[in-house]
Structures are given as C-alpha cells and as structure tokens.
Amino acid sequence: MCFKEVNSLFNKQLHLINSLQIYSSTEERPEISAIPEEVIVKQVLDPLANKQRLQILKSMASETKTFSNLSKLTGLRGGNLLFHIQKLLESDLILQRHERGDYMITEKGYNSLLMLAEFKKYMEN
Image 1 (spheres, rainbow, N blue to C red):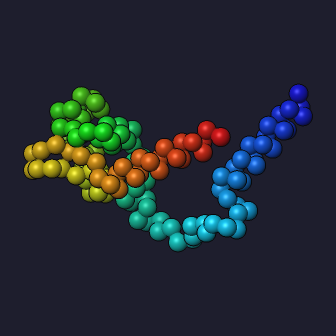
Image 2 (cartoon, helix red, strand yellow):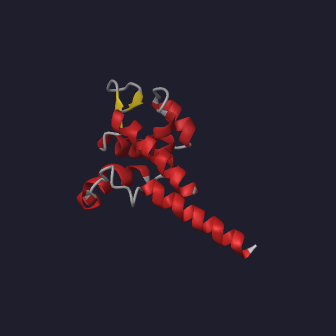
C-alpha cells in the first residue's frame, strides 16, 4: 500500500514536470520575470476574482446578454450588478454594443476564460 502511494505521487510529480516542460530544451519557455504584476492584477486577476463577474463572463462565452439576463443569472440588481459590469468593461473583458444594448465578451475576455480552463486542468492533477 505504501509503495503504491509513493508510486502514485512520483507519477504525479513526473506529470507536473512534463507539463511545465521544466527539463525540455526544445521549446522556449515564457519569461516569468517579465510578467507585469500591476497590469495582470488590475486587468485580469482582480476582475476575475469574483463569483458574479466570472458567472457574467462565462455566460457571454456563447451569446450576448442583456442587463436583465445578467440580473437573473447573478441575482444582483441595479447598482450592485452595474458595479460588476463596470469592472469587466474597464478591464476590456466585455463590451457593450450600444449605450443601452447587449453586453458581449471580448477576445481578451474569451482568452481569459480559456486560460482559466487550462488552469483548472492543472489544479486537478
């Protein structure tokens, strides 16, 4: 039983090393030190670090949404919902088609969701 657990942990570590390409010399890894902390936190992490904002963004991955649709989805009303929408608008994760029109996801917003989906896979291993 003990050897089984050790073997399982070892295989997980090998999988992690392979997925991070730590020992791979054929591909160029991204420069971690070049990550702009303030920009990433302000424009990506902060806007996505809220359950309702993430719900809003996910719902727009396949179709545009009205304010009423988003209110039903999140359970938020008026100014509370507008606060969260504004955060997503300011960080260019969504846009509004007209002054009082539908909201839709941007390319940056969609790519952020794809990044989160990839991240989820690594968290499960």
